[in-house]
Length: 326
Image (spheres, rainbow, N blue to C red):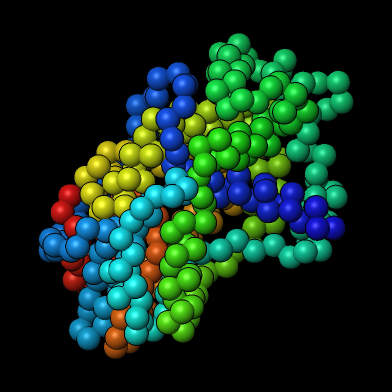
């Protein structure tokens, strides 16, 4: 039962496709950045001690401090935690990104009834079913990761995409727990409540991903390979810029996940979750601006700053915004 729930969580990791950051591998030249359409938001520039970029949103006697993230951090990344420690002290709450939810028995039943879709039909092998260019790209990436053909042989293209993402993070010594682990540690030490902005039932979304056609899955596998190429060239630079609050370099090296875009385009339920996440985060910040005192929020750089993203929506609602120099 625990294994089936873990498999559901693993598929969910593919579905949500959290951005990665890592060291440079010997891969094919990175593709052009899939940079978000950044919003133009009127902000007051603030100078802050070296450290992660922060946005200060105010309305009356209420304030919200937003910590933007660029994805998992290379193990051992050094960054100044003292300012964040001061901000969390005395806060009403620390609002964490929306969280996916799936029950133990619900997840087990989903995998029992749909788990076979994670594997190819008997007698087929992944690389033999792929078009030539996609097969060559997969071979190049898995070879750079030190993996052989057998690792992904029976995987559906969707499962292979998730497994490649996981293998890339292992190879590049990424920590998906950062900076969430440090934020959580500080909040608990100061007895500040940690609250997920929302929880989403993702059963329908997982079913939609499992039911993508072979052609759709192959297209999304191709996007994951492009994500890995890009992250291999730009992920570490994005994380290092994050550590010192260099917003310009963060934006130059950040890109939305092509895999997530591919899944969103193919599965309406996933698109709904993505849009709900932005809307719910904006609403949670707006609600926090209705009470005196301060709140700290952690959110991804893309959802925060892209056109029609969280910051632009808050500005349209009349919030005053201070942010780092771009």
